[in-house]
Length: 628
Ligand code: GCU
Image (cartoon, rainbow, N blue to C red; front, side, top):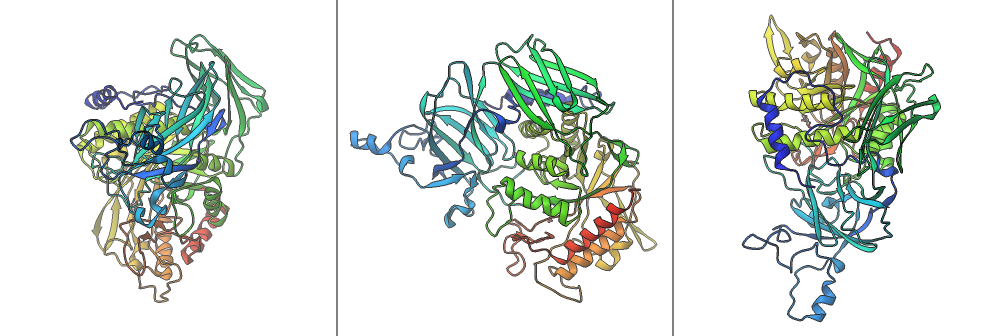
């Protein structure tokens, strides 16, 4: 699968006619992935996690020779060759790699923790393994890479299959023609390097974690299969189902969407594009999903020879004036932000279900939270499914972060494709209520056009959720009162305005003045604090509360900021920055940081800081009071 230039031109065309009329909801957009492969872990096939050989390639000579052009036979790690045997058979042969005798690692994983020499490696890495599979003529075969950071190239039995850009969304490739019955060699080239045209750009405030950080799977499906199935509750109170088949018998095919517990079956035939779209009256005994009662229903989709199983929660989310309504009732989002980084002193961004459960449980039970901002990129599907299961509302976002090349059509194509891959993968997840299209991006006409295109894409792919972005603000002072203004023009196009605010940590405002800050909200929309926070090294104390990086200062920062928040009538939620200290190359104070951003309420080993208890108490108070 290649990211085609045709799609990029279409994206540009959309830019030039902006503002577009309100876009009708559609099951796909130009930049939707070639294959969605909904709920891949439920499919027949092979989990290729485990032992892989690896070989670094800093000068990328596995991709092109020393004068450009084809890579030399002695460098092509993806060739299914037994180098040792080939060299014995032909003394003239020269190989400058040998994957069968290379060092091995366990995937999923990032190379940062593989060896000291790789801690900060930023370039191309080759991974390869062999697997055996008995194939069947009536099946089709796909390789699914859940995440590889930042660009990845797939080869099977020496054949180049396709490439993907983006470190946090899946790539699905058909390999029916290339897979062998029996032994197969799979090679994936992963390049962690980013350019100013990338999404995100090279400079962020989090560790890169180059590698294949989520599962790689071989998936077997019938000739015609259920590629996408989206089942949800609409705002006008109906159950809706959109099913996309892929294959020669995709059109005119009977489809059945069953919810056995509700004794409900939606059925009909697909159209010429293999799409079946329908709605039905909501059964009276439907139990709506909520954080307090995260009810999930088994949903069984059948079409021809294929069956797809899902577990789906049914709820509505909407805005009414300044309120966010969950199932028609106003809600306050008691949240925290979280990177995809497991607990421990040497994380590798391998977010197993157990790792995710430890962190999400700390939010739900430790902080009395009902909400999590999964920053700054789409997290693992297993984390989203866990949020569905334990009952946490989710903010999901794409890494359109800081300095993006707003005028570049390829960059827009990358961002739009990433958003579409994320929404197609996750729009069955009841926990997700917000799609965010940007974080702290400087205002300009080009940036507004770029983000309005993403907002339009999100609304077309999913009209059931709210769209937001983390904005920056401006401040004014009169009569000694400092006022914060949300004057970002993008606010007009969002359902919910979100802002990152750090008075008392960044800038020169004395901490003691923060509680008196006043906020204006000319937009009449719900406001979220998508970030606020202060750093603290767990165990460093300064009772005077004057020393930054002390737990005492961080605790006072939370007291001051929460007191300010309580004075804001339009505030409907918050996701302070951040649950856990996380690795960032930008944070190098030799005493307090050493490569860690210390704004966590818990340390990298899970040690709770004083501020943790301040926020937990605040949320317990909010939980016991009916929202405004
Ligand atoms: C910014 C940014 C975060 C960053 C944080 C910080 O708001 O969104 O990614 O880590 O501030 O400075 O710690």
